[in-house]
Image 1 (cartoon, each protein chain N blue to C red):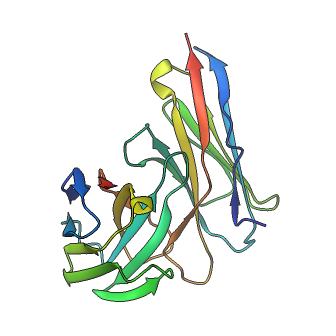
Image 2 (cartoon, chains in turn orange, blue):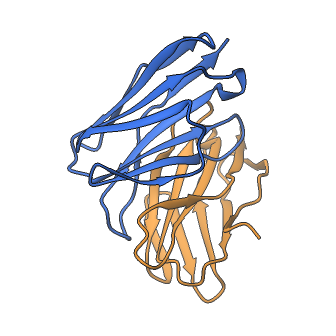
Image 3 (cartoon, rainbow over the protein chains, first blue to last red):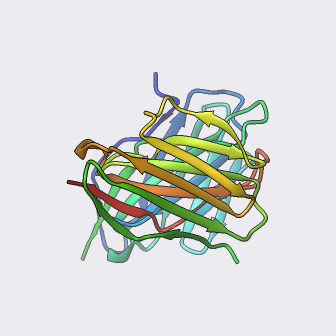
Length: 112
Length: 113
């Protein structure tokens, strides 16, 4: 079982819709969770991080964390074509490890 | 300043060449990383430096040789690479604490011919 699982997609949504990206992780003691956006040929760019159960909102982005279910998601409201990218979930393991473990990423396509 | 700077942006090298990739950050981060990323794959961890000491080497071939001259700089020396080593090489840095994010440089697109 991979440590961080994401559906590779592509996830296709129409412009203006809500895009929902999901990530599950295997280490129950994981403490920190990050969402990166990566455009083709570019480096990952941090867009959200979440440490506590519940929702965290930043503009059009909402991260949701459920540690009991080992599940973290990213919602993008009012999706725009410029949101089309690969979204990488990263998890920092428990036990003092500061090194992020990445999922394979989900490709999002927002079509006009 | 949340910038990690990598040079060069693009590099084409022959299999007998020796070249180096450079990475610099001035955020006071004491953990620095090299990742390799192939197309449509997630970043794959290669090396981790913590307080200028190599703390993780993920079974990377010896033709890749990392170096951390000081707390702001990280180099990756390349020698006798193979065409399959062509990839995007990403440098990242973070604080040496659990709950902090890692910041990535823009990457070096390496092509081995």
